[in-house]
Each structure stands twice: as C-alpha cells, then as structure tokens.
Image (cartoon, rainbow, N blue to C red; front, side, top):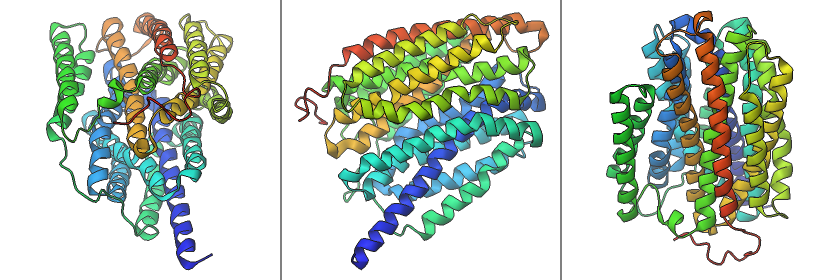
Length: 472
C-alpha cells in the first residue's frame, strides 16, 4: 500500500468516525430531552404551550437552516460548515445547562438547532466526498445505525441522567463529545471540499423559506385565535411563493425539478414527510402521559419509550437488505400501515391504562417505522443519478425535519385547543388526555393518507438503469 493510499485510508476512517459520532449525538439529544420535559417545565414553570416550544424551537431552527446550510457548505466548504456547526451545537449545549429563565433557554435551543442543521447538512456529504461509490452503502449504513443508536439510548440515558443528576446533565454530557469532534475534525482532516466555481447563494429563496415556516409555526401556537389563523394563512402563502421562486431560480436551495420530473423521488419524499409528521410526537406525548398521568419517574418512562427505537435499530438493516430484492414501495407501504395500527391503539389511552395498552402500540410503531424508513430511503436514492446523491440526501433530511416540525405543530394546535396556556396538572388532565388521544388518532389518519402516496410512487427494481429517473 502506497503512502498516498495509507493517507486516504486514514482520512476516510477519521471522517467516518467523526460523522457517525455527530450523527449519534444530535438524535440522542432530541430523544433525551423528550424525557426531561416535565422536569424542565417544573424548573421554569412552563405551561403546556411552552413545553411544546422546548422541542419545537429546536426543530424549527433545524428546519429553517438545513437547506440553506447544505447549499452554503457546497459553496464555501463542507468541513468548514461542519466544524462551525459542531462548535455552535456544543456551546449551546453548555449554556443550556445554566440558563436562568425560560426565554434564554428557548433561545439557546434555537442556536442548538442551527448547529444541528449545519452538522446534518454536511455530515453525509463529507462521507460521500471521501468514499468511492462501491463503499458508500456500507459507510452510510454505519452512519444510519449511529442515528438509530442515538434515538435508542436517548430515552434510557436521558431518563437516568434526569432522575439522578437533573435535566441539566443531559446538556452537559454533550460538551466533552462535542469538543472531541472539534479536535478530531481540526487535527485529523486537513482537506476541504467545496465546489470549484462558487455559485451565488439563493438568499431570496432562503428568506422566503424562513419567513414561511416561522409564520406557520407561530400560527399553530395560537390556532384558536383569529391572529393565529392569519399567521397560518400567511405562512402557507409565503411557502407557495417560495416554491414558485425556486422553480425559476438559477441556483435554487431546493431543486423543484427533482419533484416535477421524477415520480418515484417525489412520492417517496412525500411519504417520508407524512410518516415523520405522524410519528415524531409519539415520544413527546407518551413522555408527558407516563409522567403526568401515570406518575412515573423519568427513568421508568425512558425504559418504556426505548422499546420503539430499539426495535427500529434491530429491524432497519434487515428491512434495508430486503428492499434490495423486493420493491421498496411494498415494504414501505406495509410499514406505514403497521405504524397506523400502532398509533390507532394508542388513541384509546385512559388514566387507568397500563403497560399492556402502551407496549403493543410502541412495538407496532417500531416495526412499521423499520419497514418504512430503510426501504423508503433506498427508493429515493435509487431513483436519482449518482451525481446528485448529496442533493437527494439533503432533501430527504429536510423532509424528515419538516415532518418532525409538523408533528409538533399538530400537538401545539391540540394543546392550545384543549389546555391553553396553563400548566399541566391534575386540574386539566382531562384536557391533556383529550389532546393525547386526538393527536394519536390524527396521526393514524395521516399514516393512512401517506399510504396512498407510498403506493403511488411506482417501482425502482424494474428499471435498474434508472430510465426516466433523472436528476435534472
């Protein structure tokens, strides 16, 4: 092996370790915070709407900056944006543990979300930059496994930390790992990846995208008022203008042509958006239900909520391999149906419901998610040309975050209708339970809608040469 080959091998290994560690930390943070929400709410005296914003502020800032940061990374350098994102995420995690009030806490969650978008918008791109096509499937599989591992350990470790050391420890534990990533990326990776010819950033498109999402989510938090409905309407109008602008832009942050010319790509991403919209709020609602209604500790709640991501972690690689032989749309559609069944079971939770009413629903959602996620990703990546794998991966990540944000938006609307700006307490448990049951029922209905999009996409295996599947 030549000296150049050894150096390339070392760089690839370093990038894989750094990207996988970062891919573990961000979902770990998200799922761990869900368990700590009641404890955070108690510390800052948060009402039901503000509890929702603890999770939503992080998601909306991630959604706002994921597309622009991915584009900025392609123009100015992927390693540079990844490094800055890691630094911002680590600094925000440190400050979150010492915030004196709720507003400073929410502001730091926004900065943490921006850092997360910079990491997610560049991590996979770094991997595809250093690994040849014949090795990308393996390393991307390792990266996905790191994501699911973070989701799996988050509820358990987050519950343990909250129970024994307080919710602040969830944020503090991120700091040494973030510093480790910063050290490795600055000392082990000397290369930079950016486009040879710097293209202009689509600033008008980025501003329209940001304004539309902010208006929409703010409207969700006031859905029962006229002003809230006005903000929702304005948000929808701005996002429609964004789509129109991107279709005409010379250097768009979102290439609309991928959706208009590629049926498999369009419907697979639509299915992903709907599926994440239907499933992300499960851990949020159940964490509150188990602690406020069932009176469980964060540690006990985490042990229960780990069921779903653990099943996803075990079954997702099997589902991915199976989708290489069977049509992804068949497996993904079956997964959406099973997920809908699990959500439907959870829609009948009561004060007296025991684990026998909760665990089957979580098992079904875990199985359904595993059957859906890997095959759906396979369908998306198999429907485009190799030269735009990075773009396709970024759009899929955006669909995931937008779906998660929509899921929390649904709970914002329900909390504003059934609880309002009150603290969750025994006085309004009936309203809280109505929010939970209605939320799960709506999510089950969403999954059934997504099932039609999943079935409508068409096949990918019958066109191994990708005829008709273009990236232009």
